Length: 285
Image 1: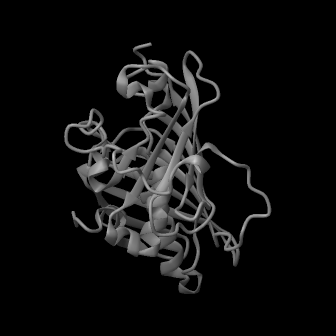
Image 2: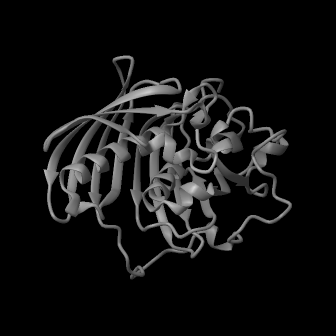
């Protein structure tokens, strides 16, 4: 793993067989990109997006400006860190929109099925934008905000904090002090310098942050594994350099299922990523 570009290493794929309609790739997802012992769902989503974009760009270099605008994934298994295989099928190839199906497998078992829609992110200021709680967060984390490293209570589980800079907003993460609060957790995240400097990796990293928060069920006193079943993430704009502000929220936590939304702003205040996932409520409750 490159210490300056760990996410680029995780999303760099080796082409095995590529033609106009189908392709296969090999990759390796380092143990950095795990939650507990298993590969992080957002990291797998980003790797699938990387495979789809690679297929389009390798077979049509004139479309190299395209990025994954929407990635919808279903999680079928929880792979271990290590080698993975990806297969891609181009379902639509257009001048404005391309659609690619992706399967990520490990040891012959399908872990993720994804549909990736590629196009050009909107380069213009939005015509309308609703305010959010992120607008009140400082653009950069305050100096007394704890990093998710070392003795931080999340560091032994959230290993992906070793591959980026991560700060939790303690005013939102009530579970860290044994309290309960609203179903909202806010944090700051920033890729390492090498990952931030590479525009395509910065996009993939931003997509990954659409699944980066601890489950908001923890703020309601519900701990344990909350597996994601389905996740859809939208790229709205290229992220500017600097810290990303992330808010994870839920409006309905049921007995078995809950939805979790992520909103991600870049250092300019632009919305760069939106996501929604369906997940299982931790079984301990």
